[in-house]
Image (cartoon, rainbow, N blue to C red; front, side, top):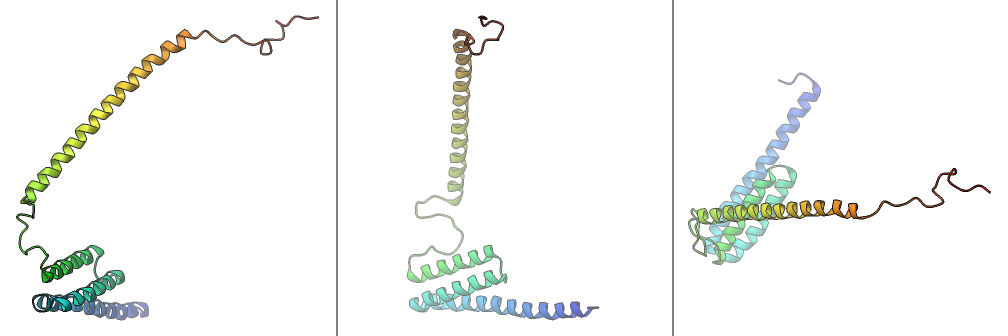
Amino acid sequence: MANTKQQRKRVKIAERERSENLKYKSRIKTMFKSLTVAAQDDKERASQLGIELISLIDKAASRGVIHENNAARKKSRVASIVELAEGAGKPKGPATRDAKGESKADRRSGRAKAKKDKKIAVAEKQKARAKAEAKAAKAKPQKAEEKPAAEPSAEEAPAEEKPAE
């Protein structure tokens, strides 16, 4: 139980915020149900409900009622339901094969192979760069030995060496 006046106020505020959050969550769930029914019956109504639902989800996420990732997942679900209503969506159920005929595992292994190939290419590029740098390092000392040491000019010579009048 709250002991101070401030704690009692915070309890009231928390209860008010909780009820507000529950209203948002409940409304989102209800709209999802009505969207799925509308998707089967009326395509235009389904697209309008989808727009309203996405707006409601964005509001809930901006107020902190639901997490941003949760909101993104729900909006994606709305989009897939609306696409199904229009007849251009993906079938429900586990993702076994896509339009290309590749399974999810095949695509994953393809990405892993591409990543491995990229690592190999980067390693080869680094080796070539290291060889070029080593070759350049060997070439630099030879050029330095070929050049004669610069003689000091007459102005830089010490005062003792200058002839006296």
